[in-house]
Length: 397
Image (cartoon, rainbow, N blue to C red; front, side, top):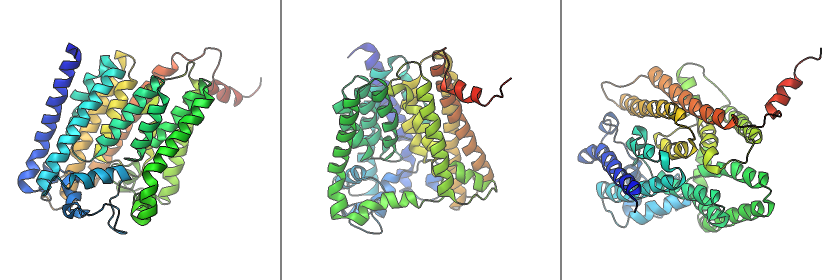
């Protein structure tokens, strides 16, 4: 192991331990409310251990009303680890150990993709604060593998990894947009077809056994997301908390998502050279998360490594740190707001929480815009789609 990799490996271990220390306070109180929010050590791991029947080793998709609210591979992880642990504390500790190992793997993958900035993953405060909230790192690891293999033209491995990631958490499905564009732009139509079919085949192979044997439990994740109202951290909840009272939320969220993805597609066409997946993955997932009806605090785990591998110039580091600062502020805000809602004598009122949510969204937009601007600086000087659209609207002399 090279000295740089060894140092990063040790820093990743240190970051994982620091994060565990942050969460460890709740073990002494067995995640009592509102204490778990006051001390920002809430975790879904022990919470769902009891609420979803893992304490009794129940099959995660057997119940029609209480199936786990995640894609199937996350449910399998929850179920399998329940046989090793027999209390909320031991269940949390064992899952946290696995998540720490996955975090280290993500750090090492980032070093392979973007060695000069990999240190940012282990020193990002919002990243460290969120490692053990949920099982997201299982999906993030396979997503990063998919990106690593794709940019090295190992398309078969990449398609398998992305299918596994989508079967663990659904977010990586949106990476298929830049993936298919890159293959089309580089005139690899056969690879595009193979990549698409392999991804679908692997996803079906993983999901069909659950969909056929426990269809209602399997569908619950998708049903909950379709019917979800404005939830924590979202643009929509912030607007409602500030008194705007938006209706037809599903249509508005879908409209914003379509506008965002269309803008992203135009951006891809604007690029002079075919981009790498690593350079654009942050942009598309940030669009999805801004339009989403929920922004869970652990979502920063997805965006941080993607932001790091997208960086191309040291001049853009300020945007990364502004964003990390906003994410860290939001991390404090959501727990203090929930503390107030669950009986604490102090906390953050909804107006303050909504304002900080909007600050976080603005910082995410700023980082994405910075990356977009940097990418467009090298675009074709002979004219662009943006030029065509805007010039066409001007009157003739």
